[in-house]
Length: 255
Image (tube, rainbow, N blue to C red; front, side, top):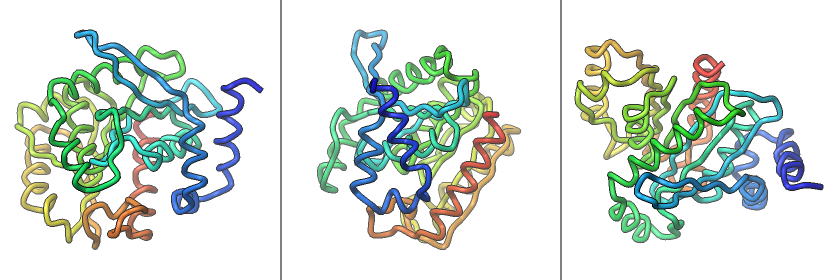
């Protein structure tokens, strides 16, 4: 069995399980993560950056670029890429750290160490990579959680895509920035989030409307990171509803 066949067999094996069932089982999360293709590309400055790729059985397909939380590109995010492939999308999860945090202190340090220019160049490079890849139907979306939510929006501004999904990420951007967006934005936010709240999100929604850009925002009676099954604030009901909305949004915009 070649490597591509092995990866597809792993993804197919998960096809009978709901997303929550996969993410709740560390063994299945690891299996899904290990089934992804390892990729690298080179930035204009010569720096090598890495990502993982999951592909659906039917190609070409719409593509989703995933940006990880402050923990880094861990198995949970890789499993989300595998799930998106199961749902029919080409899914590419980028690595903005080069390592994975296991403690909040380490995650904070890694996030603080991110060079914004390098991160921006990395995301643009991977979006352009997806547009060039023959497995992609020419339509790309960005999706990110927390730290990655803000960067998913940034990627869509710097290299316009057909759609963007933000899970409780920072959205404070200028009107000029938002006018550069090509596609609509879907946002998932938590009413009990002490950081990403109405004080930051409501002005973003108003600015999107002023820029005449389509935006959908959903608020959940939950806390920050409610969609992360490995965290203390996981809310399965709200996470599942947000995921259904995300899939419907992606299908409507990526074909």
